Length: 318
View 1 (tube, rainbow, N blue to C red):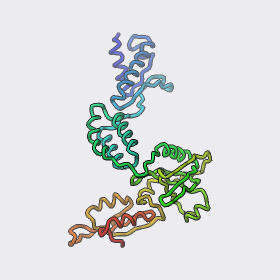
View 2 (view 1 turned 90 degrees about the vertical axis):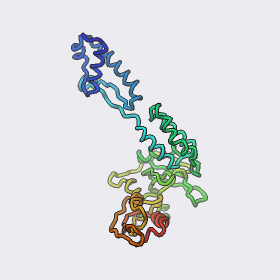
View 3 (view 1 turned 135 degrees about the vertical axis):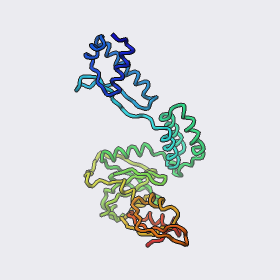
View 4 (view 1 turned 120 degrees about the vertical axis):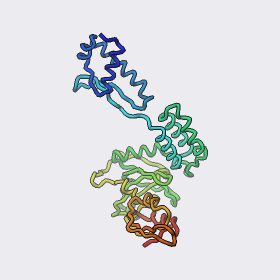
């Protein structure tokens, strides 16, 4: 008969290699009663509870009634790698989307919960200067809980009644909307939603517009999640990924096809800015000493015109 240590190690090895532990057959194999095997399983489960947070991979032992035995089940991999955490922290800081206290709390939680203690000081040192000089958005609004409530309403297809004050509005306007997506762009979080009031839609000239109205979430002065639900057929769902590829600076509008020449230094930057862009032709300009690209792209709205102006002589509209 093997001793307890060897028995537990052999059971553990079997479990981590995808095997199943049956109490009756294991008891016979090791010459013990089934209660001893149950205690061994409990000891292994306790060990996994202790080592899981350190390893970043949370496992547990479950009793599978279908097969009548114990097996190892991976719950989730808890931790990012150190480079991943550093990258996420840098992206958060660059977003400038949150107030400074919020940003400091997020960074602290990210590092403390996702980075091993021996590497935490290194990651904190690499973001300390940028965190110290962080400039929060001028609206100084805390809206994370609001955004979470809206996210749940989107998931449940619930109407929302909002009081919204736009950049040019003196007073808030009350709207009943169908929320369909939350998006982020250029420092701000946005809510994409369809207006439910036909008269308001007429005033906005969006009766036949297949695209939603865009609201900055920090400008929602008040909101109420309604019990009433709206129908959202899967075939007609709003695809925020496709929308984001075609909109610039969150200025929505009609779908357009733009055609231009680019003679700047980095066409890769253009292709990253305009994900739908395609290079139609390329020619070398002797005077510039570099290539000039003819590009076409699909875009929504007038935001693209703002980008064109920002490029100066590097862009010529065809």
